[in-house]
Image (cartoon, rainbow, N blue to C red; front, side, top):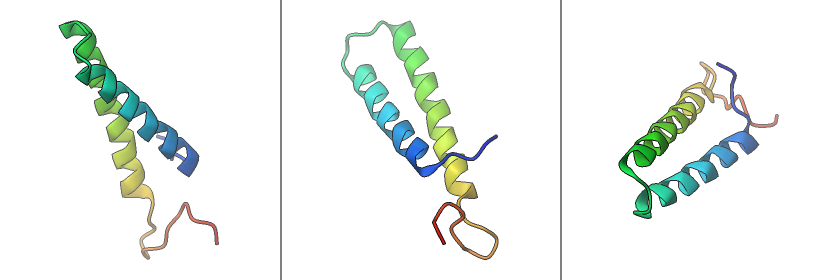
Length: 66
């Protein structure tokens, strides 16, 4: 899996907020809500992977400029 860049992480977080708003709106059918919740979980897993990979073994941020 490719590492996300910081702008991509920001975009993923915005997408999660948008999808959570739709899920909580009460306007979706059960199946639509389940599909969106699956998408939210996938996006959160991407963010979790980014968090696990953002530091080197020495504790240095891999995505920060030197």
